[in-house]
Amino acid sequence: MIGPMDQRLDTCVRASLDWYSDVFALHGIATATDDGLWRALATPPPLHSAAKSLARGVREADVLAAVAQYEVCSVADSFGDLDLSGHGFDVLIDATWLLHDALDPAPMPAGWERVLDPSHLSAWVDLHGTPGVFPDAVLEHPAFAVLARRDGPGAVVHAAEVAVTVAHVFGDVPVAEWLLLAAALHPGRPVVDYAAGSALEEALEAGFVALGPQIVWAR
Image (cartoon, rainbow, N blue to C red; front, side, top):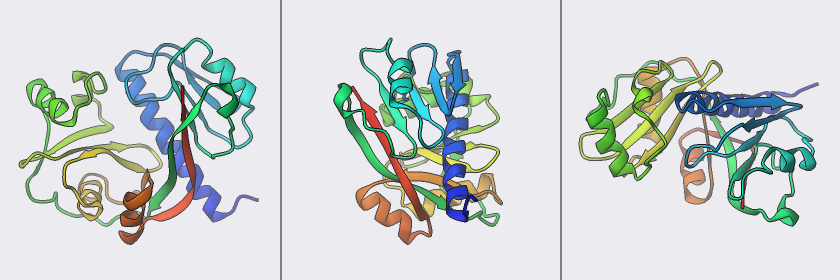
């Protein structure tokens, strides 16, 4: 029987998969899922992995086959149970999955607004330093909200069926503040994240629950 903590962890992984599915669709990149392993069928956009485990116990041989065409790539080890160190991979991210209970409705925090046009998005990307990640089509996608604070910081809110993700937060934005972005746009859904170090400590203080390892391997 799957316990409550396992169900929460599965929620995190499912929300991450939905993010990947929507981002890759924005770029017109086909993907496939077999035996608990998601994989890209063409070069991923920047900051995104070429393969992602969706279940415990995925075979390392299957992961390696899925990314064999890429000389440089990363693998999202969603349950922290892969060991790719003997195959040219090193740990790039050693983080912890986090989940926050569903939030009550709240107003948009002061100073925040949606990015609505390509020129504003271009300026946002320049500030964030993430060229090639978010094409203009993100502005029309119903699951994404690209947000900017008037004094410079920004974030992206993504609404999956099971949870909300607030990602690519940059600038001086406390966790408690970006949680309000999720509450303003998508109340009633849990919020997922992953973090390490001081960011993990801040998230736990803000009410997130730690659920399990999120490892990213890179070569």
